[in-house]
Image 1 (cartoon, chains in turn red, brown):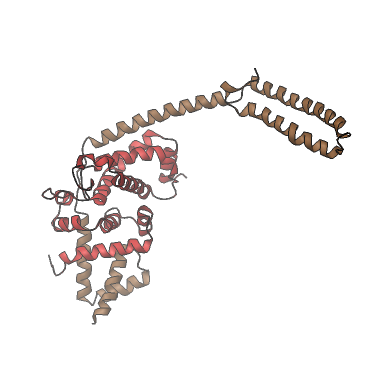
Image 2 (cartoon, rainbow over the protein chains, first blue to last red):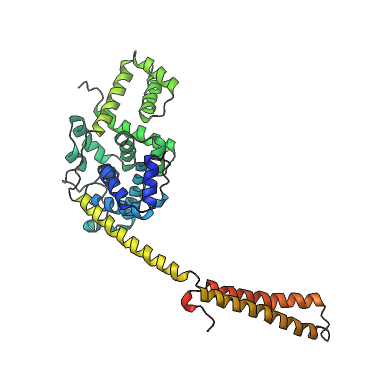
Length: 184
Length: 165
């Protein structure tokens, strides 16, 4: 019997827009959330999202359907975001800045985490998350928000599983002190 | 209880949260947690971090989906256009009958020409002190094979450049 991932792979190989539309509906929010976590900013993310889906349409044939779709999708998104950060074309609005690419909002501008915090614990984490190094933030988000395995994260970030594990431990170690000694 | 001991179990808590702790170690950790308040607090703080990470809700631009879907449809249409063009090119590129006929003529001319050249070379071989095998090899390498390649090129070349005329 054909699995969901195999159906997705077949649809992508055939460039089936209906399959792609369903995938957009299903994964759009998670894609936005991942890109915000990767970049530490909200602006520009929509462009990356669109670019990601267009790349999925263009190169969907390379998804083999043997593994889950989301790690493959996040990897595509990550490559696009990192390429753009190297080339800077999608960050033209920030061209007045020294490096052309901001990995965090300008001072005074609320971070995407502050705006997105819906619980007290999240509010407490917002500031630290914004200053946490992107590789640690990315590892934490992929593990605990996206609930991906270390192997899947390793494929996305192109690093060994041991490196991914270290990033998770380090990320937790950075954020944990906020809740230590707190009985609330 | 010494600090190293806590460190070992706190490392196991990290590994457990990362999903890489073995079942045996997991059992050992649970046993330890039931008796160690320090490590329980460590686990509790870690769980608060994880719960905090789930407490963010990012707003998706309400027009984003429509924008993405429009871009996808446009690109798909474009892709289909390119595919149609490619199919057209392939159709043009498929070898029509007249080109097979041209190839057949070129092939016959190649063999007939080779035969004539061979006879001529045989006559010249005696005064030039060549043996028969050398003549055959010469005709094969310098006449038959090049002319066969030329005939095959008629099939491989684009149709608009193809033909003998």
